[in-house]
Amino acid sequence: MSEADGPSRRKGLPVLTAAVREEPWIFGAALAASALYGVAPVVTSWALGRITDRVILPAFESGETSYAALAAAGAAIFAVAMLRVVGVIGRRVGAGLMQFRLQSTYRRRVAHRYLQLPLSWHQRHPAGRLLSTVNSDVEAVWSPIIPLPTALGVVIMLVSAIGSLILVDPVLALVSVALFPAIGLLNVFYQRRLSPLAARAQSLRAEVADIAHESFDGAVVVKTLGLEAHEASRMAERAEALRDANVAVGRMRGRFDPLLDALPNLGILTVLAVGTVRMASGAIGVADLVQVAYLFTMIAFRCGPSAGCWAPGPVGVGFEEVEYAYPDGARVLHGVSAEIAPRSRVAMVGETGSGKSTFVKLLTRLADPSSGRVLLGGVPLTDVPLASLRRRVVMVPQDGFLFNTTVGENIRYGRPDVGDDEVRGALADLGLTGWVESLPHGLGTEAGPRGEALSAGERQLVALARAYLADPDLLVLDEATSAVDPATEQRLQRALETATRGRTATSVAHRLSTAEAADRVLVFDAGRIVQQGTHEELAARPGRYADLYAAWQSATEGDASRT
Image (cartoon, rainbow, N blue to C red; front, side, top):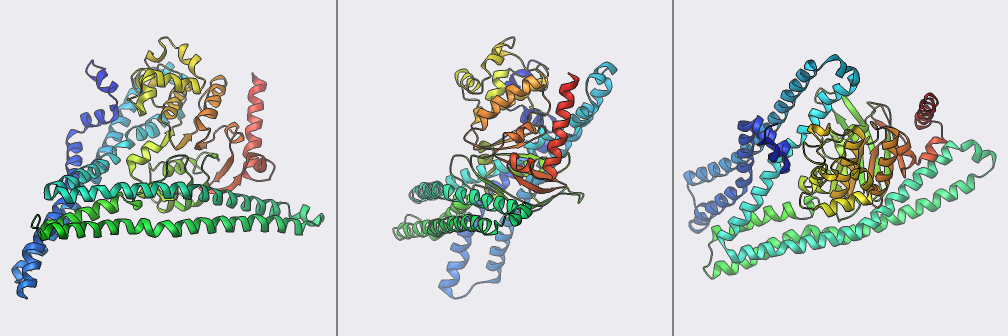
């Protein structure tokens, strides 16, 4: 790597820098399309204002209009609509083309590099791991390319809209912007009131399901002991509690939802009322008022409660009849429904190809379901702004990817503004201070390209510390302990205990020791969740989990006997 490349990587955007360097023209085209999409609403508001002033008002005053004026108005509306269409298509095609070209390029380079390496190197590295690098790792490295143009387009749209409001009339702009804190504060207050009620309902729903499973699975015991009435009473008590919890959630939503839906409309009426006064005083014209009203409507309904916000803190997760299929039609998930309560630790187990990793991709929105919904805090994932999602949902992948910089820089990658003291504090919380101090240069130790200067287990420790320092509401672990030695696994398990304490956490469990420590286990088989419950419940019950657990115990005991 050249000296010029080194500093660019240390500035925090290595993937984007490499992408621009590799595909500058496609990247530029995608950014241009995003910018076009961003300014399209401002152009639309200007066109609507001019049409109102020059076509609609004269028609009302004279009682007639010309075909030429109507044709011009229609052409203007069609032109600005096509502007947005071109922007949407351009950014999506550009981002997708860029991502796929980069993946293809780097797969060829990795494969070519494999062919150049000596046979002794190949003998030390399993073929499955090499294939995983060529396929999954390369795909994961370039997956952030897709959201970039969309995020930039939203930023440009909001900035250009607010700038246009100020240029048209600073007074109306001030009134418009002042209404947004009220919408945001009410939404935060609502979510804080609703979240405990929704979490209570989720917990009771799980209890009802557990009682039903126990009653059905233990039907012989219940009948032979004559405890039918007892089981019915247990079910009735929890069912009534669930009913009351759902009613409480419904009441809370009934109080706040109408107000949240009405606030943007009340804001529009306020803007129109103030605008009418300003127009009567001669400060603005009709075209200006129409332009401001349109822009405020666009911003209010994009940034209001429908924009997908949830209250700060641990968040609940919901999957509702989720299906997922690859572009070639191969179905991976089939009608998956699950609920994960806030502050709970949930493990996902199953054989390779059962759907666990796809579940994680949908949860982190690295992919979208073919049908069904994924919810975070009761908000559809597709309504959550990607910038907010990336800040509040953090994933630790199976093979912790590290950049070619120091260990300290890798840990603070998600929060480049923090200093060494905060990094050391996070390491102390995780019990990793001694390990870092044992490295040749502590936090200043170079990780090497892709972290190759560290072992697989050490890379996972750095990746976990990076995620912990980011302080997410939801921590997603994709088989974080699957490729580490037993000693590192113990250190990693202790760190995971701290990292997941007090926050919602999901983990794809390759080693079922992770499932043993979880609050709840989801068992996947052939793209479906076939069992769910605690480890103790599932291990004692005949079924897929008991079979997996017995096989894992047998393999663990066999490894121990050989050592």
